[in-house]
Structures are given as structure tokens and as C-alpha cells.
Image (cartoon, rainbow, N blue to C red; front, side, top):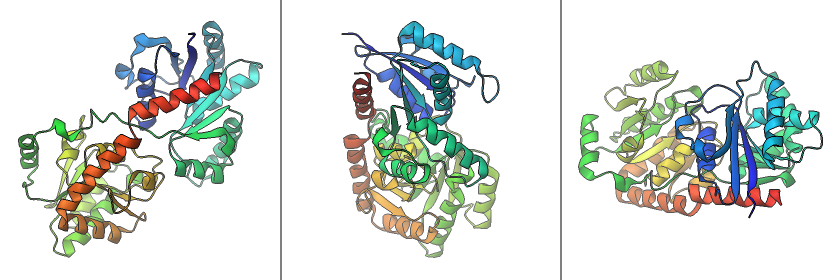
Length: 379
């Protein structure tokens, strides 16, 4: 059987959710059905070591010069012709802009264009409005647009004028064998808790996110401060680092939480820190389909999550965790108090979370769904 030739077009191989998901997909596509290549625009290659390049028919960084480098189009054209590429898969909108210009200049090309969108355009400024107009044209002229959850797709239909008939939904997935609480023994968890000055009886709520404004770590701290005022004892674990670190540390000081929270800063492997928490909070005001949420679910922890993007597609409210309206830190505090006071049910919620993940959000399921789409488009 002749394989389908697919060329992935990315902006870079930087560390990011969309990039990680794409590399997982590239590594896992069935090579009996698909022949896969990769090109990317910018010389940022943090994730390249995790890419199985030996299985690619082509792998190249175009090292673009400036925002719009027309030499990229010539290189792209040559690769498509040389390898008989049937599908060009653009990860996010900027690579799609290049693919759209390529199609405009080199007419009657046989390759079909697919774009995968992992985020929302939400910033209300003039440049975003221009980008919305450009991307609407590009996306609506592609053969297929793939969104990562239902709510994100609805956002793009309603706010950006994307044709619903072009779209499909493929949920992100993770490897549940990698994110598995059974990998960690009770003595290992107890030792890590002790090293962080937590007792085995402490109820620990974590937040695992890069410290930037969109993740709203200060909301997390405000929620903990409200819990503390009620007399309920809850500890906070902040996993990660970033540009807002100083402001977040200052907020903890002002809220009187320095004895109640621990900062781990950057950790290469976050799993040991997630597994010692009793639950995880996600306070972000802009998520499409949170990878941190999937990792939490796989580690059998309930989530308390601000409603954004696909939050209500991940969390079954009252069954695997709780949802609250973004910014309502009193509701966040209320849910944390309930979880601390119902620890057996909290554990049951975590177990159900992993079951939901195994049924819906694994890399195996994600890869199979992409393969089905690619085969349909190639025929």
C-alpha cells in the first residue's frame, strides 16, 4: 500500500503545548500508512531531541529572515515537488499564512492544506483585529481546520468567522503510562513532602503553571487567603517559574501566606510534585484545552478549574473536580474547603479523573483520530 505523504509546517520547536503535541503526533503516526516530513520557520529547537528524525523523509529549519521571508516559499515548493507531498499540516496560523501565500503564488498545487489551532485570539487591540481578518481568509481557504475542543471551535466560529463545515474536533492527549501515580511509592511521596516542609497530614493544593499574567497565580493565593480566614488549614504548592515570579512572591507576603505556601520554581519533571498534592487548581483566564489539566487527571488528582476554553469538557463538575467562574476567588476557596473536609471523596474524584482521561484524552486516541482525518483528506 502506498503511504500518504504528509509535510508538517511549524513556526519553531520551542517548548510549548502545541509543539509538544505535534512532536508526539509526528513520532506516533503509523509509518505503514504515512510518510512524514517536518519543516519549521525559526531556529528555536529546544524540543528537537524528542523528535525521532530518523523516521522523517525530510526535516529542515528554514531559518526565516524577518516576518515574511519569500525564500521560504521556494524551499517549501521544492520539498513538495521532490517528495510528492499530498497534505501540508500547518500548526497554528503563522505557518498557515506561509502555506496560503505558497498556494496563491504556485497555483494548481496538488497538496491539500490543513491547519491545527491550539489557542484563541482574545486580545482586543488593533493588531489582533488585523490578524483575525488575515487568518479568517487563510483558514477558510484551507481544506480542513482542526480544533482541540468544542468550546474553542465555537469561539472561532462566532468571533472569527470560521466556516463550521471545514472543521473537526480532535482532543489533545497525553501518555497515561508516563503520567501514572503508580510510578511513585508512598515512601517517595512522604520524603518529598517532608523536604518541602509538609506533613503527611497536610492538605496540599497545587498550581502547576508558568508564572505569567494569564495564569493568574495571584487568584490562587487570594483563594488560599480566604480559606485561611475561615480557620481551615490548607497548604499551597506553586510549581513553576516565570516573569511574574517576583510579583507572586510579593503577593504571598502581603496576603500573609509565607508560612502556608512553598515555591518549587522550575522543575524538569513536575510529576513528583503533582502526585504529592491532594488537588490541583487551574486559575487561568485563557486556556484552549489545558495540558496541565490532563496531566493532573492522569495523576488521579481532582481539579478546581476556572471556566475557560475546554474546562467543562475536561472536568465533570462535582464528579471529578469543580468548576468556577474566572476571578471568583470566593468560589475557588469554597471548593478547596469542601475538598479538604471530604478527603475520601476527594480521592474518589481523582480516581474518576483518570478514568475520564483514559476514555477520552490519551495520545493513542488522539493519534488515531488524526490518522482517520489524514486518510479521508488524502483520498
